[in-house]
Figure (cartoon, rainbow, N blue to C red):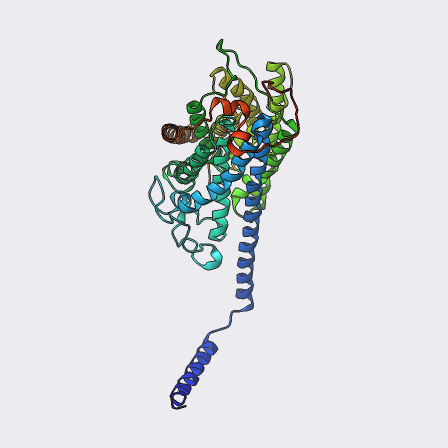
Length: 475
């Protein structure tokens, strides 16, 4: 009771002082309160948009799994689905632990040094104060909370890793693929991403890639090319006489479904890269350029296949659509709608020529990932330097060669293509060779013949469904 006798007056005095200070503080005016409410609401709407777009990109893993499994033989279906499933889990871990900080952390022109070994730091959205505080100034231009930024960038990292899966399908060890995927999402993707999106040296030079023709697709393509070279072709793909023996996929229904899922997912991939919906005209513009390039890619591939192969091959049409989407990913916010038609059409032609060319070079890519992601990632990046139009998004890429801008932008784009390609391809070669030496990267000939579903996973996708006679080359 005596203690209470001394404490009670102190508590009463403190309460009185606090009440007086609160009374002295002016209440916000209705206008100030309305402005604050609008700012908070805008952050909320932008965050919702970014998260929905991120979910669309995340769901693209379903599309990749359907396309890749459909274009491969039924005996490898489980293996391909397992790779496409687990690769996002692997990328989630590696990008969280290492990749995010290397890509967006404050650092130097080559890589970030803040936020490595776990994402952390201030929520730098305008709703919490100064937009440029914290460890991630490179991405502080986006007005959404830190975790929204992280999730959206994470699904892009997962996409880059997924690209490799199809190119090395039907003969790679599951364990080796997992290790390579972790390294890709932890090092290769974020380091080159820092150069372009993280305030690195290519960004300073004037290189532009709105949604990732180079950052995502070419990086995955270069890494896949290195894997294809080190692995070698599938058994029976190329004859001793140099002839190419086609190995048809087992489900065009799966391919059809997968491509449409990817087409829809790209409406999160490209328009979502605005990371805000405040500029509705830009978001709508990116939707249109993305769609038109996809449409023209499918048409261009159909016509080219019809002329060169004698038939409008559906796999070429499907990959033509994807090629158009990859090609427009870099320039979608910088070019006009008519230009997107041309970019998509050329992408459709290129993908058919590339598939034929890689076969002639004896580089075995079961699903056409190199032709879609590498070749057209390069094409789309260079297309910025050709077709960019300053009036589409003033103050960004400026004008390309065909709009009176001269060669400067095109040269900068070319330098970026070469630099990212050299770093990723050489680095990936080293990792693939190291894995080959340490643990091996290819399954045994017996396992490849029987199918990776049984050898690697112990189960089958179609256990009681016989589609071909036993012993058939395509069974």
